Amino acid sequence: MNFSAINFSQLAKTHSFWLLTLATSLSSIYFTLIWKAEDLAHLGMSLLFWLAVITLLREKLPTLNLNSDLLSSVLGTALIVIFFLKSLTVPPQTDPFLKIAPFLGAVGLSLVATSLKGIVQYWRELMILFFLGVPAAILAPIFDISETTAKFTHLLLSYCGFDVTRQGVYVLMESGAIKVYAGCSGLEAMTYLLGLSIICLVLYPTGKLFHKIITPGVAIIIGFVINGFRVALMLLLVNYRQIQAFNYWHQGEGSLIFGLIEVMVFGSFYLFLMRQNAADTQPSGELKP
Image (cartoon, rainbow, N blue to C red; front, side, top):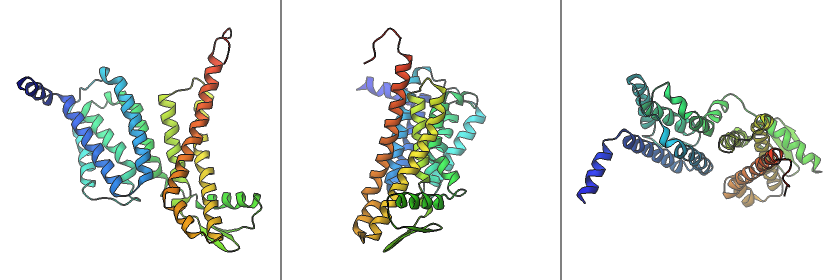
């Protein structure tokens, strides 16, 4: 018992111990805020992104340089204090803080752990957390793609033979109509899949430059197109008076199913790229399966 107590006492005096404690506190607060805000979609994506970050950190843990300086520590502490102060109240789902909080806390923690020059050793982890929510927080107030989504939905249903018209962000059928709000435009799904493409490129890089260039673009297109199918389904349900089904697919568990479909479609695409890359790099004398 004394030996264990001494070991813990020595551990508590180390820089890495307090960094780990601080990182655990920041992540726990963040996930608690998302849970209380009832943003289950963002919660699921956050778990995936954090898992990727932890995987990267475990690989480089023995080689990390944990030497900070006064300026870096002050800047990092300031960012962490902002994080804690903002976390005193539970923000709504629409609050940009929920999107930028992981990146804000990670930058602050990185500055406390190392210097401004040394923060480059965390560039992959910081990039992943940046794409978790920062693009959505920046683009949402600037770009509203609701009308573009409405146009795509109108085009999709027209090609399927339905009698449908469009007036701005409204898509109308004979017995029902829907308005495509900014939150249903697909921008969030597009940014999530963009971030997922970054995770794939970082954790499982493909050797071809062309694949690296097209992967983020394909991720964005998948997010937009599948969300367009979701909006089309909403209109059909409203037109045929299936209000209970509409609520399920709009705000219930059904909305999460579409997110899962998006991830599976993109995952299948990236798996195809990896297999194609492996086949191209296979020695010519080796038989392909």
